[in-house]
Image (cartoon, rainbow, N blue to C red; front, side, top):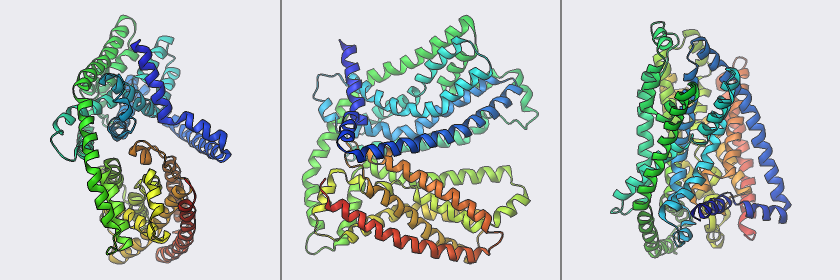
Amino acid sequence: MKVKKLISLFLIELDHHFSITKRRYSVKKNKGELVSLIAMIASISVLIIVYFLFYFNILNTNLKVYTEMDIQQLFLTNFIMLSGLFGFFLGAFVLIGEFFSNKDLKVLITLPLEPHETIFGKLFIVLFDQMIISLLLLLPALIYFGIYTKQSAVYYIISIIVFLLSQIFPVMTVLLYTLIVSNFLKRFKRKELLLYLSTALLIIIVAVLLFFSGNTFSINIENSQELPDITINPDSILSRLAWVYPPAFLATKALSTIGVNQLIWLLMFLGFHMLLFVLTYFLGNRFYYSFYSILSEQVSSKKTGANFEEETWFSKASNPEKALLKREWYYFLKTPAFSVNGFANVLVFPIMIIIFAIIFSKIGVPEEIFEQILSYNIFIVGMISVLSSSLNGLSYSCFSREGHLLKELKMLPIEIEQILKAKIIHIYQISSIGFLSGLIIGTIFFKLNFFEFLGTVLFSIMVNIFLNLTQMLIDVSNPYLDWDNPQKAMKENVNGLFATLIIFGFLGVFGFLIYKLVPIVNSYVLLSCLSLLFFILNFLIWRLLKNKTYQLLTKEL
């Protein structure tokens, strides 16, 4: 009976999470929805085909190197770890949103369900999402390795088990951490925000540890002294990796051994994951419902004070544009899923640039190549600052984040232009962190002079405005308003996919044009012409954005 109840809970949660029934109904009623769905599937299909063409080339190159060194099993270890680490970094905030911010918890908590049953239902949804990472990174590697090394049917059976359990360790690690930390956060006021921040701290700590321990667990193929030790005793590296990522060690052993040893390692792999489920069962029953109940009480107690504060924004004495900006900041900071993701998005790319800068400084770039790169320095620095600020997650969700509050925005006696200005100012206040960070890092690394710096600033601002307005245009044309978890408005918003494709597609084409034009046109002349071109484009997109916003705010929702 309990198994049937859990299966029913899983299916209901799955239907609710992906809005399967609702989408099916809306597609039948509105043919426009069907066109959008087909366009989305077509875009994703093209992206997947292009991705796998490059990815199989990477797999082939890596496996050939490992085969020549007779350490093929480390190939498996690397890709199992890679998919797990991606799952850890990308799934942490999704898990918190699903477990602590989802509105369906108000219903689930009233049902005759044990805390661990609710947890397993939620965990199933998070793991279902995370399996996309394993589907893209791990499964092709396992299949390719099996074909390349002509493995038996037993290998493929174990590969399926490894694939299906690949995201449990990273997701469970975050879940166990949040359950333990939530017990200590009960006495604080901003519990949900502190939970997000503590999880962000965990991610930063893990990233720093991985960065500084990279030399310990990496293989330097060019080091002739290191190669004999690896080829003679590859198990020494595996034993070191076991302390960093146990599932990768156990799975590699289960996939690379034969006979009774293979069965023993497989049972140890399964036993390790069973232990994680037991820990989740124990901690979930103790901490989950109690912490969520306190969160719910805290939210309800704030409603009265929040309503009073909202009334003071739009009093006669207040300025409409300032009031709207206060409103943007209030809802942004009030919702940890928005604030943490927003600040994280503008900080991730600059941190990656710093790491790559450190790596390149240690490796050393040949002087001829570096001089050739310097001829494009203005545009490279501009690209860095533009990417650091345009990948903010706020532009493509500017109206989606409103959700049901869009009705409130429609009722305000305020001009469309004032609403857009408030949203744009708010976006640029946050994205300026990434913009300035990328600009400073690029200027220092490429040693720009004063005039190059000024030209780069002007150019970057024009391109940045262009990309952010384009993302806002995408969102206002098709906002995702019917979300039950604020995390979905940013992380599970299809507009984010289209925006990312546009940003990288645009920068790819634009970078190619710059590469061709710089040798034949003076950099300063090219910079001035492009800045003027984007100024004109920004004006045209702004007019279109106002029209689309007017249509959105005047139609019935």
